[in-house]
Length: 406
Ligand SMILES: [Zn+2]
Image (cartoon, rainbow, N blue to C red; front, top):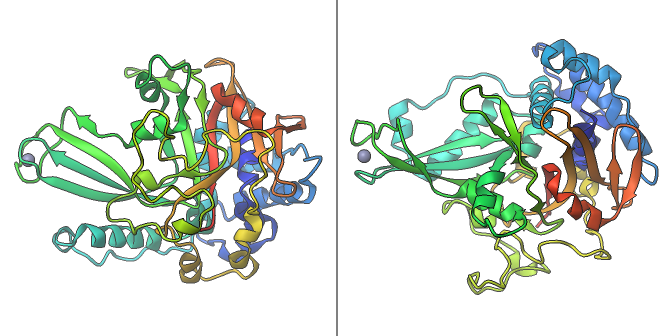
């Protein structure tokens, strides 16, 4: 729990939204928990904000814990719960309590929707999701994926657009792609996630009207401002559905200049301003030579110690919409998910060390006060170098990246 809180608090706009009290005007009176989770979260956010810096506090989130347990008894006690499940639960809860959306009827019939172009479907699906789910939390963490299923018998394509809150990328498949390498990279994991997948059973083709073998491919249509990447280290038993094995495969990941652009839908708008980016790729198409970095990283894969810290303060970059609580429409206008390039810097890592049953979570987070990295466990916070942020790769479990303003 603390690991996830520390990571979330290193997302400047989220911390500011709660610590500065902006969330209060968004509290949804009809939410089942009456804003208690959001208020408890805000109390800890204020503590974290007041004390961030050279000696980050050891937060004691007992009030928040009580709210979480009230709402989700499965998180009771002091067991180490799966950090990703807890994070999803917490963000869902905070989203629900600050949801400005209101249930209204969907204005398209199925037939009308089917007749739309793919680009129109993407927009209509996004707007429909936002009508029900409009919160500052979703503005930060939400994105949209395009899923294309192609029937292998007749070639019929079926395209759907769904909102996503994080990406759960396969570690096993990424490492299987390079069995001789001592480690896999985040790009390998993203490649595996966005690779064409064979659907072996049960897909019913709309054109053939019978089950057909098909292939499925995911692409990013709209990118989130905070990209949460969950490295699927726990393999799940196909029989019990419970985790049965943990993969300690070291994963390398970039501190800066992670790009989602290689995974963009062909319908996403082309990147703009890329030529002004200091590390922008050359205009020539990415070479496939063995020396060239993966296109999802715009510079070297791991920042070397001594690299100047990112000049962008996460708080100041998003300060405008926070200072005056914006209307849903205005805040959406200020958070253009579709605008590219989609470039990210790492702000936090939730680490899981140890075995399947007896593991322990810690966090390494970047302070937006001094832009230094801190290693945090339940009772202490110590300065970490950027090289140790990268070296913790075999325990890295959830990565938090924040969009670099274009
Ligand atoms: Zn077909």
